Image 1 (cartoon, rainbow, N blue to C red):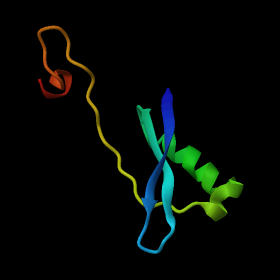
Image 2: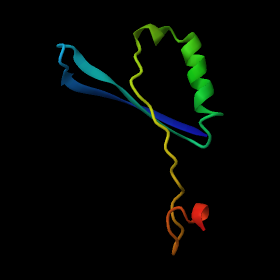
Image 3: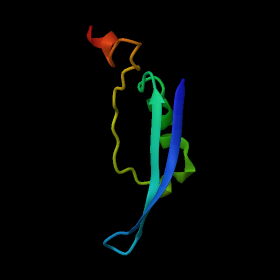
Image 4: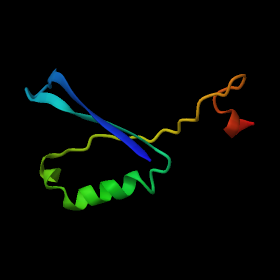
Length: 79
């Protein structure tokens, strides 16, 4: 399963007098190599909006599952 959501933002005017606006994109998935990367490759090859898009940064974070009663976050990974 892949859960994704975009959030539009506007942050005023930049140093050049241009509107500083864009889209924050957040996505949760089990394996980015099998889920997110193939989608991005298809979009990169075929999306007509590519002419107007500028990518400025990205990151991947590991988020452990929640804690069981009496346990702690990451217990399944650490102990």
